Image 1: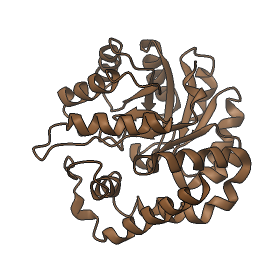
Image 2: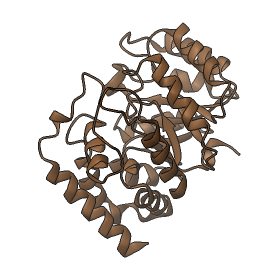
Image 3: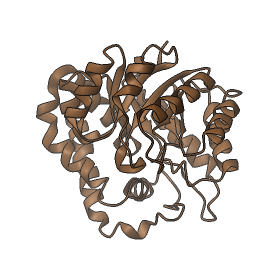
Length: 294
């Protein structure tokens, strides 16, 4: 079974105790909620504060996620700007029952096309599992070069791209470059557009707080019903980005009683969500929609 057989992956938040340690019980509970909804789980992506966590905490997350015997695939985030560290991280994860890796464009350095190809090839060669490449220039400072797709499309471990540039035009250009590679939208609100342009699914922030409803949203979008969903889901997913991600998601998860507190690693803080009523209203709207349509 390929990771591309799963149309929805939740970019999972990482719940913490007040002292900043990983809240392992909350982590397990969140993963089980995703398993019940049939959603794949991505741990230690940007929504999971993967770059802010100490290495030992990251190891705890992977150990816990891989020990739960869930039926859905587990994907592990790989990101940074030190190649050796990323290779060592992939090699560490090989000992656990995880299904794939998410490989993000190198951060901060703004490498050119050939540098990107060399970076991704090194990681793909190291991995013994399927990989999804991640284009998110708003976070990394550089856009994934089409040369990466052209040069690496035949690599046995390269099966998918998470496209989060926010540009339908870029997405279409990437698809022309690598016609056999599967694409996922990295933007909840843009899924209706991406699905009409042939994407395979979604890597979602919204499914943290609405696991079953987001699963249905993805199914309907992939079934051609995206346009009718756009107004509601655009408004409600925008609420989850009313502050820096994953701050609003953690605030709402805490409000729903799904995590014990809203603790984040600096420089993120829950103080950047000033009006929780926006989140509560979005939650009510999505819950109502799901109740009426499930």
